[in-house]
Amino acid sequence: MTLNRRAVLTATLVAGLFNPMWAGAAQPLVMGFSQVGAESEWRTANTASIKDAAKKDGITLKFADAQQKQENQVKALRSFIAQKVDVIAFSPVVESGWDTVLREARAAKIPVILTDRAVSVSDPSLYVTFIGSDFVEEGRKAGRWLLDFAKKAPNAELNIVELQGTVGSAPAIDRKKGFEEIIASNPKLKLSRSQSGDFTRAKGKEVMEAFLKAKDKKIDVLYAHNDDMAIGAIQAIEEAGLKPGKDIIIISIDGVKGAFEAMVAGKLNVTVECNPLLGPQLMQLARDVVAGKPVARRITTTEGVFPAEVAAKELPNRRY
Ligand code: GZL
Picture (cartoon, rainbow, N blue to C red):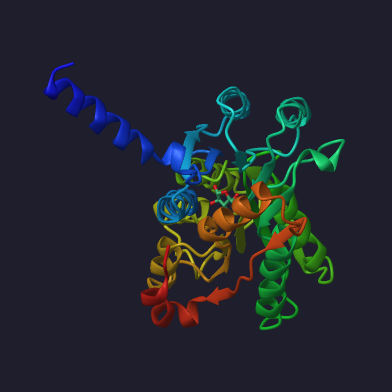
């Protein structure tokens, strides 16, 4: 064997000895993440938080955007199972229809973490834990703000219209439930119309236009399940020649920058915070789950309520 060939062979062997595979270095954890879509400012911030955290944490992230379609999420979860990822995390676009694919993940011994939205399954052991907000409490916070607002004119009946989130989604179901639970204590508060705007600005504007065209009763209050629909509705209200935030009081949820800007402009009255920055907690949770450490079944984020009066001061502090 020539000197040259021996040198090459030796170099290869030495390099091989330092291959992390052989050095016993831990392989990066691989997470499959199925995201609802890119329907709102909140979702954009949520996705950024997850991607940034995975990068910082050295976790290999396989990310799939479902464009708000459940069938795309089921396909993504099946693909993650086929790729034998270490852990699956996802934000389920709707609550039902997950039992079969979650059973497939369990059969493949891949743990599943729910983030942001919950599922309704026959066997809760099909997922390890949930990290996200308490949507019922968010609805209650919106209702409590309105109860307080109504005290300014105790004898006035207030006609409320509601822009619901995606039909069948946990936030839409629970935000409605919490809001109605609270306003039930004041018979002057009447919810006259309620329709889904699918959490988007475009649909929120379209449905608000229809509410305004109905002209059956003067609308006093709009309750929107997220800021993006509220911002779309603000456009419809202005195009109808009315003053949003004054002629129609607007209550929404998320606390995105666009909501703070609308409040500073006097067009939105309050936003209930729903924290999308779950990335760092999710990555730590994934490591703990894969390591077999015990984790809480439900981890909820702490969130505030931001009325228009504090918007200008708070806006510079907003991280999403
Ligand atoms: C809530 C999240 C909702 C946001 C919307 O945690 O699921 O979905 O409120 C988003 O903005 O579309």
